[in-house]
Image 1 (tube, rainbow, N blue to C red):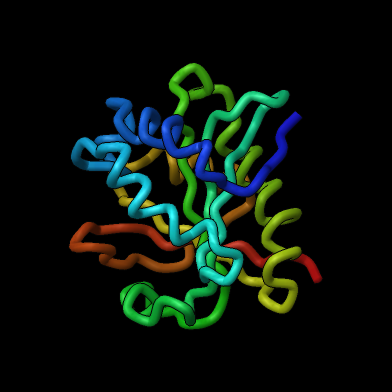
Image 2 (cartoon, rainbow, N blue to C red):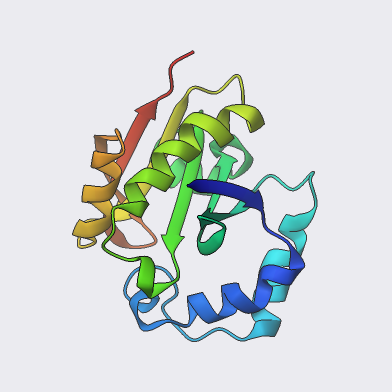
Length: 169
């Protein structure tokens, strides 16, 4: 019922629509974004050699959100901010409002770290996700997916909670 596919250029209009939805303003996309800005930001990530791997998540074949993962060591400035230099960082959002509040955040995150991340980074068993402390819904969702509180951090000037998940070998 939940599956993942790599982000493609054909997804950019949908991504732009999602990023401009009002619920995205609070924690993910603070300002409006144009299709040209989406293209500039995500086009380079379509290259398989890019360190960030972006995926669209679908429920019964219908796209509803985006996930991405990357090695912390590939982004040293962010890794320093998190206080971790090893492991895989995961980011996600549900873009389509009709899929909010249905438990899909928890399901997509857990499936992603257990099924997609190991295929990309088989040697890295620790995953991290960071949420602004005020984003209680995202924190609850990540906890429900099996992540555990790891440490308080300041991400981009915002008090945040770094959570971790140890994948089984």
